[in-house]
Image (cartoon, rainbow, N blue to C red; front, top):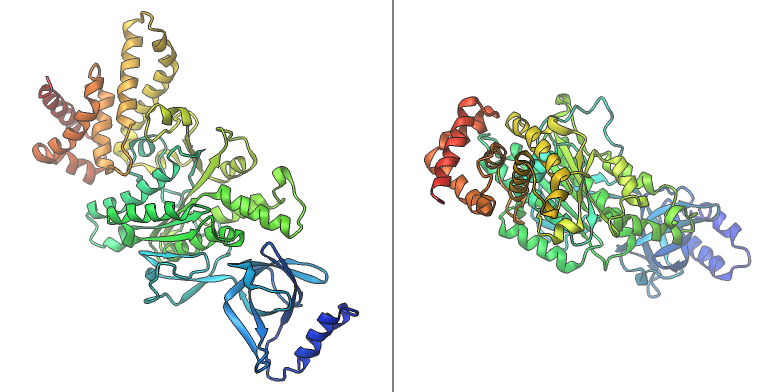
Length: 533
């Protein structure tokens, strides 16, 4: 029955006794009903070279198996899977998911007739899984059954609508200066140990705060579901993130996809696409999802390793020619869908690690050109104690004020102007020379605003609270009181909640700052400031 299927193998293999023996053995298997079967003739560095599989597709999942010496039956090991990447004249190049030591020359490769897919659904919330959709948290119950391909085409222009809803990160520096909207792709870029992951985790924590603070009765519709994809991270780092999310009581609205440094390069390459697939499940059902890729630099390195082992021609920095495409087709899947498709959204926060602040390297420039803006973290600012260490001059959001509520727009313009003036005059302040009163006032205002934008890790703020403290800083109430800024900030929100709760309610409901509310904020801040005298 399978003689026709393996005639090509037989013809290619004249003189090779092992392959001839394999082909003759296959012909004896009258019970096999598989359409396409191949034969591993070499395995090295996670790459299997396979004869046969004449009709296999690129990206198709395959299974590895072998004949038993006892009953001469074909046994398939579902734990050993691979993905087809190279279609060559005589052979097929397959990357092996998992432990390559389990694959031996002479093993049989079976087509699944299915492109790589994973299961999706609410059952993955509060779970830790691998890029193939297998749980790795020792809980094998309540698994989702709906399956989706990990590689699908991004929504077209007609299926999208302009970004207009804000996705609050809870960070004053981001929400006021570099706003992110639902459906946007905002890059977080910087050297190692500068707080890139911390921004992403704060954003996840803040989604639960925003949902709890919402007056929307349909909590599940308002909540932004989060997917964190850890690529090439240490297992201890993933555990720390999980523990932090559990402490903040947000883990049950998150899914963690872990492709750690101990996993193979193919799994690290596949992980971001799996994360996007789970996020698309929520997006396509009219809900909102946030996916964080931490980080795409390591995914590019994994893809380079795979490509070189598959003998694809190298290009700049030894990356293959299509390394741009692996990131563009991933990030294009983030979108805000039109009302006719449910108005769901998928927001992407990719992370890129730079070396010595070099944003002009190959992978950073690729991802910068794909995304809708970047949050650039500076090592010097980090060492000076600025948290988050965001460079306001190099960071940008190409969506801009479209992703802000009116109240934040009212203060963001003055905030940007004051900080820009401060950056220009900051150098003069270090000289200690005599300055005119106007320059001195601008420097004092800039120092106060910089202090206000400084925020502790894992302490996101609701946007109404951010607006209050930023308005006070811009109004000049805290000028000449730099040493009081952090104490004032901690007490002011509690003071407003207790004594003047109508101020917060007005901003929350009207989404703007009326002249009456402006006066109330200034008078209340002066009233509290007197208590420090």
